[in-house]
Picture 1 (cartoon, rainbow, N blue to C red):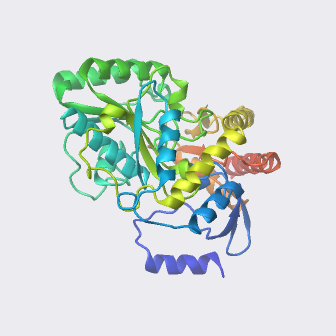
Picture 2: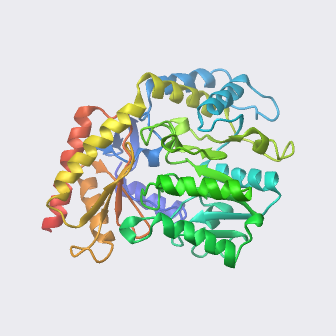
Length: 425
């Protein structure tokens, strides 16, 4: 079987709306490596977009899933509940940042977690409006894409967005937007267009994911916390991509000196199985009436079992420290490349959530062509990379935190060779 043959079938059978960054059709995977249907090996620096932080098919995760599958795969927790769902909620209530009593609800996807966080905030406050940030990504449902701060491809062609959703600029020094600018835009919004007494929540990614891996400055988080406290607004941290040791802490918000009221999570929680969660202040989480939250597959037993194993692996293998170590080594290598690559204008990100941004040689404009060319060249050499950013000019690095040292070193050599090849083209 050839990748091209499968791709032809895919083009006939699958909606073109499902975008793809590669035409590599995977047959099997292990830790940080995948093999396609032609038998070619790749080093995976995408991790299913920060999903398999514990690596593909981690033995402990697989054992937990197989053990649960032998017992039962689904009853719907709202019909016939199971204890390990409650135990996982207890673990997340203890681990999610915030020195207050918490409760949790399980759903299936990151977008669904965001939807439910908004529902909870609205139910708790009796207010309709939600504020998000330019460049943020919160999913592809109607509320998710309304909150997402990027039009193409997420909003284009889908008609009117959800009402009472607003955006303010995210602070990015490289793009000339400061924390003061962002907080000033919020205050202007409150003065000109939106009574803060109508705002249910402000939602923010501690590190923007699809938007380009820009970390939120601590002063911004403090400013948001202060504004939310002043006006009775719920602060939601979208940790769907940043969660579960990726940033060098279990949650990215652990690095800040303020806490969100509600946290959304998914991706890395299930180690490859679909599970998501919303954890927040108990009084907020109890605002919805019974039956107002949940879903048929929310907290599926296989996902619950996988999530318990993921939390165990993160602790037992000290993956938070591993993320910091790998991220430091990656940044050092990128800095050495940057010294002779003027197009690489920025290297950033906490832990092992690292990105490199590319502009034109004179630095005057984003350079998505170069970023995509490096991604494509690396793929031909056996390294899977992803691009991101509002302009598509950022390469993000999301390898499993369990990547072995020798495989990591091999990936670094491929990356450097790919950049050199594109520069010399």
